[in-house]
Length: 372
Figure 1 (spheres, one colour):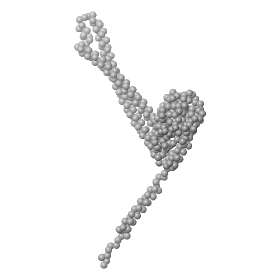
Figure 2: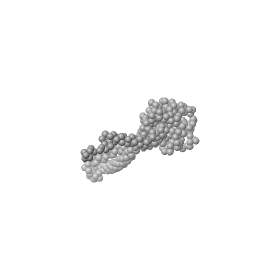
Figure 3: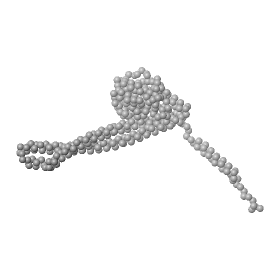
């Protein structure tokens, strides 16, 4: 009888087994989900986002000044290369002219039978013409020797110019490579800032903008510009009004000289214009572009970057600041503004924050220079 019994089914077999397996997999997935959620990185606060964005903007400004320096060097190398190329073209033309003259002499000598002038003179039948022809032959020989020397000089000059041009071209290409590298660095930092700001909720964005307005003394929205790039002129008028109400229209402090007064006057006229990295005006500026343009309007030529502008005049202490002085910030000398008195400056802060009046205390002070 035992041989005819049906085999006993496993308690996990059939439908019950499949159901149990499904439940086990679901439990495992749920456990994994909760475990992953438990280890997920917490959402950053608005203050943390602001701190990261500020750091990215500072790093972008460092890269911007390096870009400005690389661009200045590239422009100088390009101008030098073009000057050498033009000079080489002029020298080549003179070389060709000298060669043509030498060729004409050679052709004339060939047509005369190629005889040495002394032989031709010895064969003459007219003694009265001997001395005259001798003098002519001597002068012809001098002209020919001078022509040969001219060809040699021009050939050497052309060779030297072409070698120098090749060197300048190599230098130019090196600066252009650095230019592209720094441009990529700037764009990368700005994109990272835009990405962070885009993750903020409407409430968080409002808190962020309030914090920015509190720091800068204006209602400017860095978040709006960061979402769109390097700033827009459309947002500038309201910002300019806010900036002026925060100190732009205060009674001016007397500048030490007329040029300094002109530089401050120019900077005031730019209030509200957008920050655009690498810009030197007239419709947009970066920080060193603004100070360079302000002093250019006063008849003083400044170098392009913050770390060269700081050496463009006489260093002054913070207690000696006067309107028109250049004030620098951060340990890497990566930001500059134009002092206007009363602890205030006019500067182009960063993307989304157009040219404005701000206290010099809002950034780590690094030094000051008096120009003009």
